[in-house]
Image (cartoon, rainbow, N blue to C red):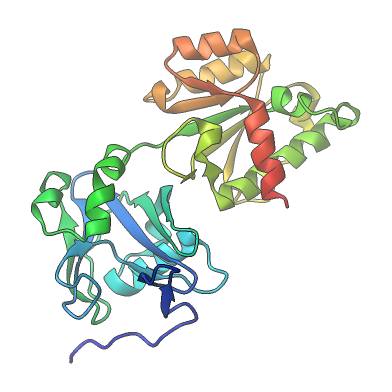
Amino acid sequence: MALQRRPLASGDAWAIGPDGRRYWGTYGAAGLLLAHREAGVLLQHRAQWSHFGGTWALPGGARHEGESARDGAVREACEEAGVPAGRVHARFLSLLDLGWWSYSTVVGGVDELFEPVIGDAESIEVRWVPADDVEALELHPGFAERWPQLRDDLFRDPVVVVDAANVVGSKPNGWWRDRAAAAAGLAESLRALGDAGWPSAVLGLPHHLWWPHVVVVLEGQAKRMPDPAAPYPLEFVRAPADGDSAIIDRVAAEADPSQAIVVTADRGLAERVRALGASVVSPAGLLAALDASSR
């Protein structure tokens, strides 16, 4: 039986710019660049009737009203290529923003290989392509332009280690009256930021947003913070002695400490983690991002 086009949804229409250019997606569009360390990246050979038909690009399409770019990219990849959503680990988002329309490339990974399946008439073929072979294909112009920058970070997996005492202590909001509650408030704010994505500027990384693994190191009275209900997307380390030593141990435990980013304003600690190969960012940038995400 011939594959059919999907029914139109809330964002499935042309957006027309002030200069007459038009792009698909009333609320913007998003695509998923999914990577597997052995198989390469999952690409879609676009149907001839589509925009830039016959070229290779990412499974993707128009975002629905109110839908995040990450959710839209994963949904489209599920519908078009049979991507199992539960196995996708989103790494980062690269944004093309024209002001009146945007395209979000969500880069993610899977650990367990799966066989992609064409889900509708928008594809001639969907398959894994080794990264070294991508540029040999006839690529969609937009994807061809972004591919070199995206390829460099396909497997970058940052681990953010938060010096909770230092971050909480940098904002005079009465945290000292109940340090466990202050730590719980920070954890909940970090959870919300993790859902939305960390701004790249906060982490000193390229692209637009990141979804790193986040480790919160607690010390002193803050260790009394109750365990959040499982599952919870943060890792908590309750320092057996001082927090600095626990942070050093956690960074050193990474297979690649250069992937670690420590959030602290403690100069001595910063020097020690940099000696291990990690990078350091200021709590001020994180607090600004937390404030922005809570609005």
